[in-house]
Length: 162
Image (tube, rainbow, N blue to C red; front, top):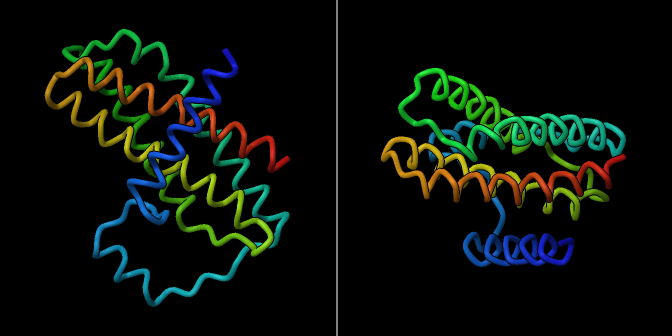
């Protein structure tokens, strides 16, 4: 089982690098332009570890909470949709917060892994929005799988950050 997880993580990482070329967070051109004038100083190692671990723990908890709901999607149920939408907003906000963090030079390697997971979650959110909008259960299921893979990577980030 563990080898299947490692294989899935490896495939995810390789496909992320091939598709992205370089790692970056989802932003539109307006956000990029607005952020161009902001110069953010890198965090210290301790600040970085604390910040990244806290965000990663919260993201993993949200994804784990969604696991059962996405295993049995009820796209026509307004309560289900409300709960999913709130969780998606929380995930998006936490991903955006992560993208604003500037790591210390000594933590750049773990930050790259973290951004791979964040990009995976962003892609999963896009898939989930589309799957719900088109009422495509297969796409919702695929989004859930992508979120699970990203959560596995985030769990590794948590382990390294502690």
